[in-house]
Image 1: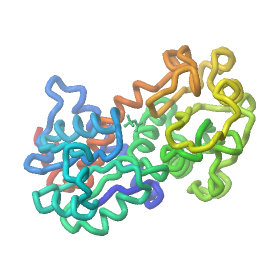
Image 2: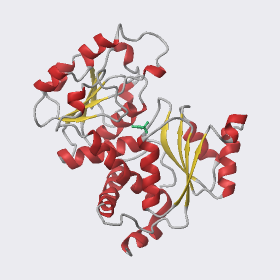
Image 3: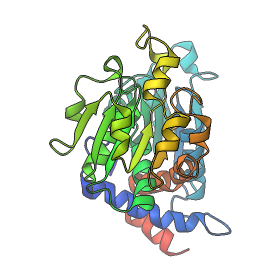
Amino acid sequence: MRHLLGITHLQRADVEEILAVADSFAEVTRRSIPKVPALRGRTIVLGFFEDSTRTRVSFETAAKRLSADTVSFSSSGTSVSKGESLRDTALTLQAIGADCLVVRHASSGAPWQLARWLERTCVVNAGDGAHEHPTQALLDCWTLTRKLGPLDGMHLVIVGDVAHSRVARSNVAAFTLLGADVTVVAPRTLLAADIESWARAPGSVKTSDDLDRALASADAVYLLRMQLERQHEALVPSLREYTERFGLTRRRLDQLAERVAVLHPGPMNRGVEIAPEAADDPRSLILSQVEAGVNVRMAVLFLTLGGQHAVEGVAGE
Ligand code: CP
């Protein structure tokens, strides 16, 4: 794996390999000194051209636990603010010695473009526009499989602002690749027209506007953030009505079966797509998702940068 650009170009065996490697890094994370020399001498640039808390901090933690050198890079305070192009910026980082560029960018497709320009630097997509967020989907698969077991035949319900969500596209692909049936629940104005093409198995995704009905047979419910900053017109009559129809409200939480897991990629709009009581409920895996992010991102950096050399490094610890 030279780059990780999206879930759409991965096969089931690729995802399973990443999850299995993440298992071994979970063991490293539990050690008193959670560090291995697997990527010693490698330089990872964290290029965050768009805001992030979870993804940026967990990639940086993952890189440090693998003993890589890290450099943080954003638009402000660099020559990007003077108008330097993405290509010139990327070639500059490669010339300085970046072995890997972890990139978050507001522009869909930016990581694919970078991968075409860079010959010696691997590219890991940390979220591009409304397109893909592959490491979020991988950490969600890891969290769910550790909680529920294999996803084959599971019914996973994804709710909310699908139209503006890179998480939804990557997660529909990843969940269906692992055998789950997915129901996407959203107002028609927040659905994507091509959603059936996101599924990796024919007929494994369907859409609905009836959340209560979908939840009745769900094994997990995944709330998406209402992305008000990406909505340039009124797509729902009001947030109050949206919450009433599509939010995991206190009423729905009280009706939810005990076995149903609750997930959200963060950051949450508490009181909009998810009630505070639901976010903090024992069924909520939201902080487990954050924890999983470090192990899964260690696995992704290890597999893109390390290969067999790195396997020896881990085994030697
Ligand atoms: N889930 C997610 O990508 O969160 P951040 O934007 O904080 O990285």
